[in-house]
Image (cartoon, rainbow, N blue to C red):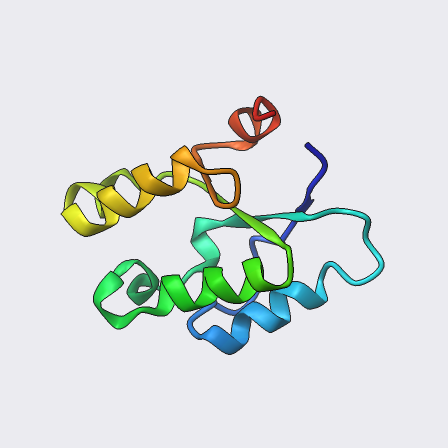
Length: 109
């Protein structure tokens, strides 16, 4: 899988509009996956009640960009059954990835 990595430093991603900024990093790149360090995401991103994660991911998918969230989300998953279910469901598909590190991302088909 060929991907581009969103730099870990930079403003926190905290809105659906930020997905458009993320897509801008792919301009001129021949990839369809963007690796997003979980450190770049605002804490409220993982609160599924506000729909931010869903809207953000859907915006990327609509433009045929598959997000790979890279980093440890074990604390967030442990505190949210909804997030745990969302991650499990995404892992069954081929459009959204949750991985602990880049070695795990590199191992994906």
